[in-house]
Amino acid sequence: MKQLVYFSSIAEAIDVKFIYNIGEWKKQLEVYNLDVITNQLTELWEYITGPDLWLLLGAGFFRIIFIIIIALTLVRISRNLTDRLFKNRKSGPIRITARRENTLKKLIKNVVAYVVYFIAFIMILDNVLGFEIGALLAGAGVAGLAIGFGAQNLVRDIISGFFIIFEDQFSVGDYVATSGIEGTVEEIGLRTTKILSWTGELHVLPNGNVTQVTNYSVHNGLAVVDINIPYESDVADAEKVIEQVAGTLPGKYEFILGGAEVIGVQNLDASHYAIRVIADTLPGYQWAGERMIRREMQDKLYKAGIEIPSPRLVMYSKEGKDALLEMERERDN
Image 1 (cartoon, rainbow, N blue to C red):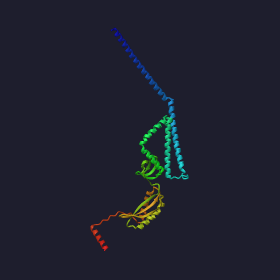
Image 2: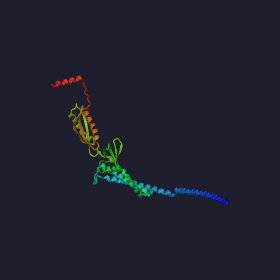
Image 3: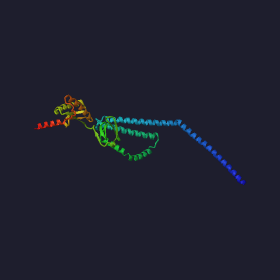
Image 4: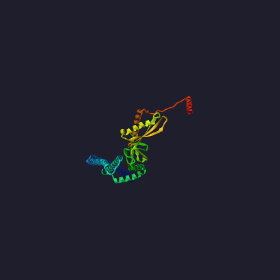
């Protein structure tokens, strides 16, 4: 019994000592962790406030600025070289139209700018930020392959844009109608075409949607005007006045080429007959030519005593109808 009590006392003493040691170890560990955290914070603060970090950031910043300046300079030089290349196009062996020249100039400038900016971006990632470009490009290639299967419209737009430029379907400055849009071509890219309508809206059209194009700026336009003459006026007199006016149009308006041609009576209406007049104009000026022809014709016809026909409505009563029929019978007899 005494031995049991003795051993029990020893076990309690060992437990107390073990618990005491654990407490001491915890205190020492907390002190050690606190010292480690304090040392790390101190080292971080010294690194932030020290010269090494700021020298590294400054050097990286100046490298980025230097690369951007070089890229902008190369883009500006390429644009000047492109303008100079097309400046003396008339004296060279290769002749191109002014509209095609504007298209090619804008396209070359855009392509060169995209390539230079992309190279500058890669240089910043590699030389300044320290990215592994090889692995990045490999990952981009795999991602691009995966995206390519879902980007069929993008590929179609680029291919269509290439053939639009290669076949010279339309150029910058042309007045075209396509895909329900009508206006002046502002810019042609490999993916999209920008068309400015005459009311000021800018339409951005994917090249893949350009399936049919009506180009009003390739050949001379034709102004077609139908002039209404009342039946009370003689056809020969009206045509004489119209021919006199038509001969004076080219001298007044530069976009009307040659004298206007009087085709003759085009149709007969209830209250008038129409004399058709046509005239060649510069490309895209057929609508302005029609407006000027109407203006000049109306003024001269009015001064010659030929007025604009008015709608007519004939009304008669039953008694008047019977009397009219009786008069027609007597005339036939």
